[in-house]
Length: 566
Image (cartoon, rainbow, N blue to C red; front, side, top):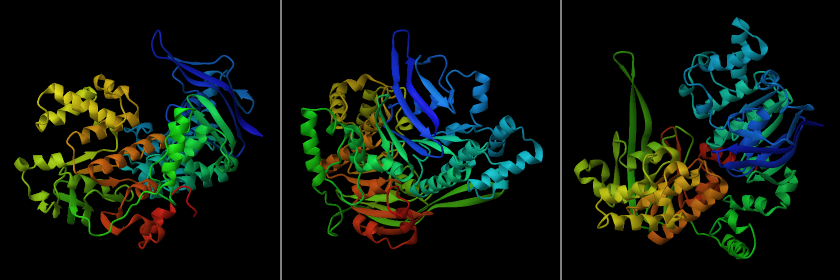
């Protein structure tokens, strides 16, 4: 029996007077009672637009739903019900968890108030009953000290706790359908595991159906009963999960499955979507991709490689004022020691708050260290004064996690790429620097025409390529990648990982590669460093660490990888 039936859903957006965008093109699928249906595809495939259509949350000013489209919830067409009835359905019978909890939660209201608002509106609870039910919900989603958290603001909670608050709001009225839009994308594997286990338990307890939207097929293999694969606003394939993973029929589905770095082996090159689509040139690409995928890329250290950078006893404390006279010390990094070999990759893994990013910022001299030393080719960078630091800034570059925040929105791509060249006196004139910028864009897979565009005109994956191109302008010897591929679609991620490997092969660059995605780290790293609470708990080669982890925390991280046997 189906709880929800989507039939011939078409959604068009008006961009301007002359331009229309067909975001969803005749999509149909069912969500049976008490089942989990996964909606899978890359960014721009129409997954989230389909979900917003079900919730009645499309922008009325520029979105048009097709005249033959129907969304039947318990045999009621949600596209034809009045706004008052839709208000009653939304939140009470159908609830949604959004991708980014920090932008979905109101920063000026406490957590207790925001959960209480749902209960007041739909169930009419007030006073002590309201407070009691809010505490129950926070307890149910696993928030520690729920009574104390009632008066906390969203910014005072970790990313995982914010997502738990969003889940508490969604299940407050015990809905029959829960729509989860990429609810675990930016979370650490351990927190992701907790959230998935929590949602599974809540689904069973409340007998909910779930529409789970994601681009991570490893997650889908664990949680879904049925899978709907979307691309460019259309359904490419839908089947029971067990059948789809065993025997994918559509080339696009096979491509999505192949793009993800496998845990059991390390192919020379990751396949990308274009390797599988079409015929002719694409067929030859596919054959080459299969050949590359069958060849193994060697990783690991022999031990006799020259050391590019070595950190010893690296420490960083932050101080916060408490009251008028007191200061509280937060030890972000506690005596970390490690080395990075020339032309090799050190992978760094750990949960949020483990000190990974702080280590990166210390190495890049973007934070002053509290103690320790960072020796770059034998010289302690921490003792180099600002007037002599410019050559080291040129040799050590960093690519940040969020390409939306790390590129100046007022600069064209040409300005973004030529600015470092000007500062460091590279290139004879503006014309030569512009030519160098165009060559760099081609190296990262973007056309030179992109030079005149602004960051907002690019997708997330393209912006990250621009950020990498900017870091490469100075031909660094050490490139720090801080979660630089974590939130990208698997196909875009595969392209960027291939690019990073090509650059390492060509320039013998060293990488400090930080990620919470353990499959990606195993694929990229020659050595892996595990951090917890500011301390290095284990360092080993990737094959050794993944096969026989020594530290209990490393074992916990590895057991949390989606798709891995538990």
